[in-house]
Length: 269
Image (cartoon, rainbow, N blue to C red; front, side, top):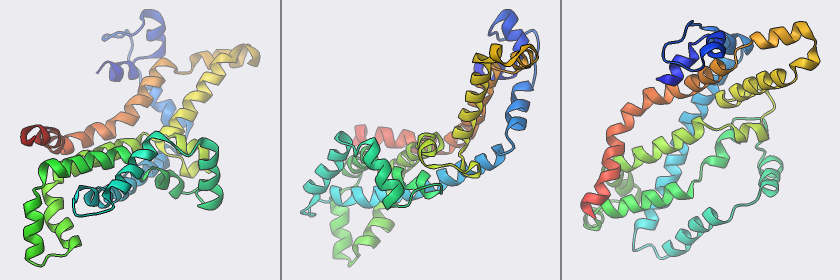
């Protein structure tokens, strides 16, 4: 709430009395500056929503398809693939090799795939999903389905997935948060402004303001005065609000699944 109040506080009020729940002057200047300084902000909103939705669907699908065999005791290679998953948590590919492979070999350069593909495989989420399967899915149910002639894909998607909805919803929210807050991949691979996600665009906007503020004295008295009038502290809070609001609206829809997913393991354990 305090962040929202500061975002609607005039910059001169912040300079006079600091941060307060009752500012001396209210203002929309921070939001006006955020939307007027970059006409691409609505496009950036679309990019972030598109990346988050598509990336979450694909990453959850990969997570379920990878973690389900690790849960099955009759899968003879499960120890190898569990070790492979855990190994990638301890040892990464390194920045330079990863960048070279992604850009020059996989073609992940200045396109939506560059913002989605590198984040699809998450070892931590896979281990969490496997643990959820172990704590909530009885093996007798799988054996009964096999006796009735159910195939592996039918068993997974029509029997196991409905049971595992709380765990899947939890993983989906974690993935959605990761994709929504992503800016690092955009900094590495994206050069076209129309492909910028919201976080990266807002970060660039804030960096420009900070640069002008630090170098105002070198730009002349008139420009220095204009820079001094630009929103700063309230702009930071406004940018935070613009980023958080969509997630804040989405969270209640996942809340009951998350609570169920976090408690079912302790109840059945």
